[in-house]
Amino acid sequence: MRKKALSIAAAALAASAAATTVAPAPASAAAVKIEIVPAHTETVIEWLNPITCPTNMVLTGRSHHGDEMQDTTYTCSFILINGEQARVYIGDWGTRQKESKADYSAPDHQAVVGRWHEGDENGYTRYRSATIFWQGRQVLLANGDISGEYKESNHDWQAQGNTVMTGRKHNGDENGKTWYRFATVTVAG
Image (cartoon, rainbow, N blue to C red; front, top):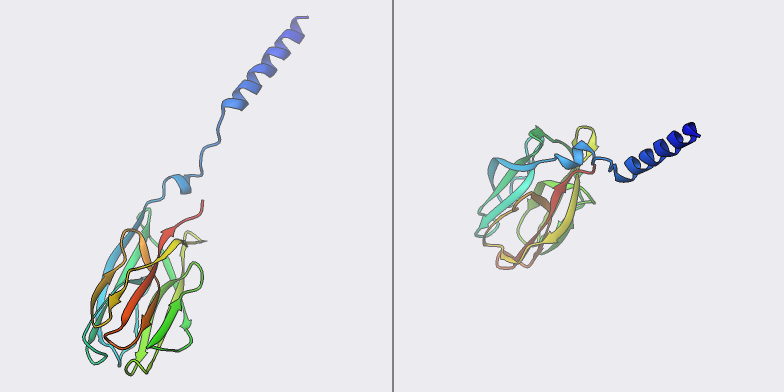
C-alpha cells in the first residue's frame, strides 16, 4: 500500500510543478535593445548626384530647401541590436518613377538606403532598398506608417524612435507635397 501512496503523491507533485512552471521567453526576445544611431550625413545637389548610404547604414532622414538645383541632405544611421551592429545587404536600384507623381514603398521588411533623382519634377527618381540581418536572422520592419505632408521645397524630416525610412511619396514640383514612409525595427524571437 505504501508504494502506491508514494507513487500517487509523486505524480501529484509532478503534475502540480508542471502546471505552475512557465517556460521562459527566449533570451533574444526578452533582452533585445534596439537603437538607431545617426552616423553619416551627406549633402548632394538634388538633380545631379545619387546617394547610397555607407556600409551597414539605412536612411533615416532627408532635408531639402529650394528647387532641384539646390542641395538635399540625407541622414544615414546604424541599427544596433543589443549593442551589435546589424548587417545591411543592399539591393539594386529600383524602377524609375516620374518625380512629379512618385510613390515608392520598399519591399516588405526592407529599408531605403539610396535615392537617385535626375532632372526636375518631370525627371525620374529611383530608390534602392536593403534587407537587414542580425545574428543570422532577418530584422523585421513593423507598424509601417506615413508621415504628414511636407512642402518639398522647405522641409526637414527625421525618422523618430526606432524607425527607419521605407519609402517616399511626392506630388508636383518643388512646391508640391512630400510624405515619408517609415517602420519600426523589430527582431523575431
